[in-house]
Length: 65
Figure 1 (cartoon, helix red, strand yellow):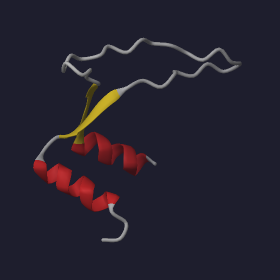
Figure 2 (tube, rainbow, N blue to C red):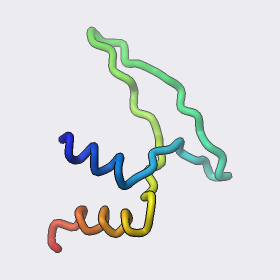
Figure 3 (cartoon, one colour):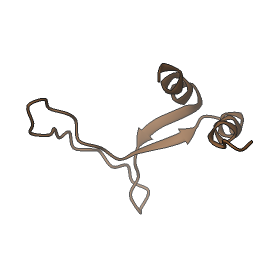
Figure 4 (spheres, rainbow, N blue to C red):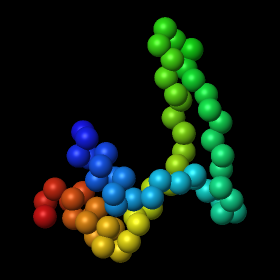
């Protein structure tokens, strides 16, 4: 799990999601109403930092290769 998180952080830029007009969407911070509160899912953008990073992500996401 830690390797996967480190891989994503090293190869991708995590940013706000964009709407149809290309404007950034600022997510609302909402929590579930349960015994243990969890952050509700938010939309985000995951963009490779470089073309080399994109190739590396593509290589590791294809189990047949």
